Length: 305
Ligand SMILES: Cc1cc2nc3c(=O)[nH]c(=O)nc-3n(C[C@H](O)[C@H](O)[C@H](O)COP(=O)(O)OP(=O)(O)OC[C@H]3O[C@@H](n4cnc5c(N)ncnc54)[C@H](O)[C@@H]3O)c2cc1C
Image (cartoon, rainbow, N blue to C red):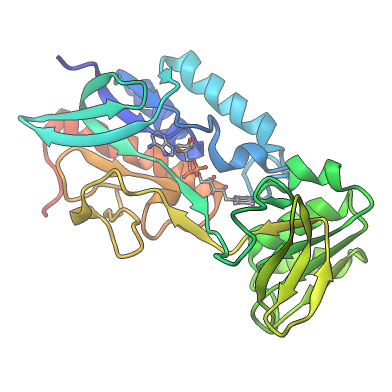
């Protein structure tokens, strides 16, 4: 028995915007939130470049508003994961993390991405003991200390700036001759005396026993530090979808309307191949996916495979 028109996996900004759009065009919609209601943005101190917020907005403010807007419009949230997805006889069937099952006419996968690990000795053992992916969560615990940020992209420099508000010294270790982050972040970092850039360097080991005491770089140099924050790229959470609609990196392949080649299956946001990397784009893709699914439910015309 069909439980909803559209099942959405993921409650980041892509999933919540898809849900809002879907219910506003009259589709019964269920969102499986996954572990993080709000997604990656939830722990960002200041989301930059999101329309409507010229001074930035904290994720812990924006995400609950987006959630409230979607549920007030009629979306139903279920606090569990989608663990398996299959299609047959015109119906998508999902198996959920709480042991239940669900049937829907169509599915939007908005399961986002996870931060990559460095894959060096010490990282696994010291995760949560100084190794972190969340600057805003851990900066208050590191007041007066030195920390290392690994990576030179937008996330790395943005989080280095967040850390520099609280810690004494931030050493940004990155591979290239200059960080690849957007100019606004490079300029802000240049103006922040607590941040040092260490280019053409990689971390070979994270040091410490009960907690982080520093890092050893590939050239043998050691930096004493109480925290190590790793921002070296993202890995898409696309594994729920059939391999036929994923690229080599595991991201979901869609057309410009967010449709996969499988009938009634769309994707949006950081789980999607070609996602431009910003929250505004993820929100837009969520809306586009919901509209594409709604049109298909009306006219039953899907893309050519
Ligand atoms: C450190 C950092 C700083 C950033 N700063 C900015 C910024 O300032 N401005 C900006 O525009 N962008 C920024 N971004 C990018 C921004 O976070 C992403 O654009 C945005 O979060 C993508 O949204 P999403 O909904 O696609 O995915 P996500 O935010 O990754 O959300 C994915 C959702 O899927 C859920 N999920 C995962 N697996 C399952 C499953 N099996 N079943 C059900 N649900 C599942 C998760 O619980 C989560 O709710 C930043 C990213 C990082 C890492």
